[in-house]
Image 1 (cartoon, one colour):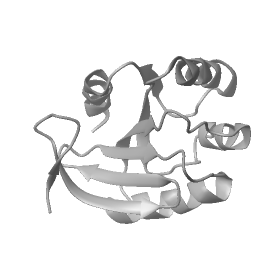
Image 2 (cartoon, one colour):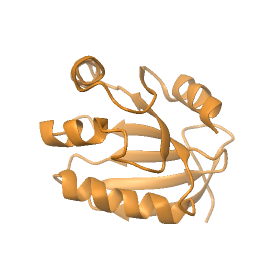
Image 3 (spheres, rainbow, N blue to C red):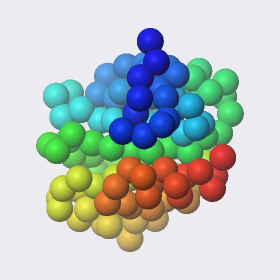
Image 4 (cartoon, rainbow, N blue to C red):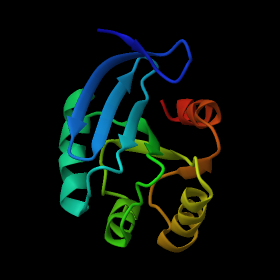
Length: 137
């Protein structure tokens, strides 16, 4: 089944579930990862995420759009790991969409103190994030 993603003309061509993450391959070449607040995640979860993402895109690089449920807060160790350049060998860039003030604070802290090894930006909406990510296709 093909779904429309985020009220745009972009179609979802594949969806996989990996612990706390719903991972969608969009027709524009962007991977959209949404983190659920219902399941805890850690570094091991992120490594499993990498395997699923790699399978979805044949181990090539793709830009990554990242969203979270309102109460899904990435633990410190996951932020430290994800900031490493090689933490996600398939992500060409990360765009975080912050829906809450708390997510925005954590995102700004992540950019300032964890200093991600891939191009990374924080956005208030998905459209701006996707437009930026398309420069990394």
